[in-house]
Length: 180
Image (tube, rainbow, N blue to C red; front, side, top):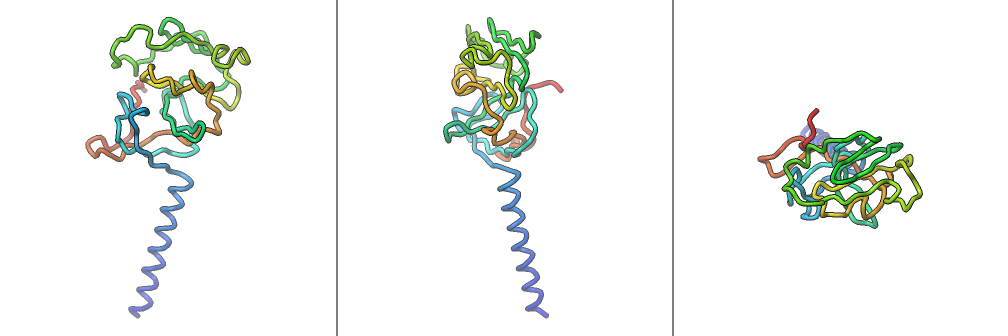
């Protein structure tokens, strides 16, 4: 009787471990925020969970890979949209977009240089092509985003940052600074 219970317990433990490994491989990606990834919402050494294959929307933080390196940026525009950044004002589809999440960043003159989709793509596109996104970092002096890499292909996206695990004082869903 005891031997059968032991086998049953071992089988349940093995199934639990395999289930956790499956979740990690197919659905979740834990990542530690580095100094180059940090901003006012994501601090250095925070441990966050990335939800793989999640739909992304404006303002979401995404983890993407470019040339084998991980980067985190904010989604600014989606496929089919036109974007112009001029005089520190974002125009998406010719509408002014208030980037409320930047209001807590200290004022710096010309912290975002002017660009359009055409300048980012060398004149190849006027709008974002299907399967691509425009992403920018909140700390605009960090140009490791679409201004440096060009438009980000959806196949480069690992997932959307959703949950902060540590520090425990900030445990919970990640604040993006957007008003719902």
